Length: 131
Image: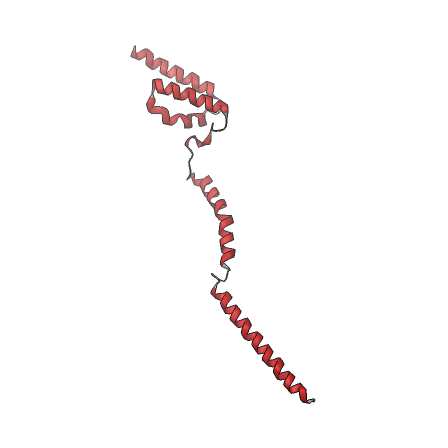
């Protein structure tokens, strides 16, 4: 054995110990920052990307965010015309039923003429009885 080999071995062992101690320090710091063993940043992004989908699915099945009229006729110009006609009609004949207009448009989507005929027939009878 050469004279320098023992000193080199001791230096190598000392360096190895320092590396192990440093790794332990870092692993302790990392473990402190973990939630259930998961990096909080990863949890944040997981929640960020999954919550909107979960809310949409839950809303689809349980209808939490009910839009008045179900959103029917909001973009369709024909539905907007029928909505105005029905508002004017119910404004004259039965103002208490104004809140039912969105449901009627939803129910009779594509069959608005049929709805119009039914309403006119119904309220013509009522007007005739009142006279």
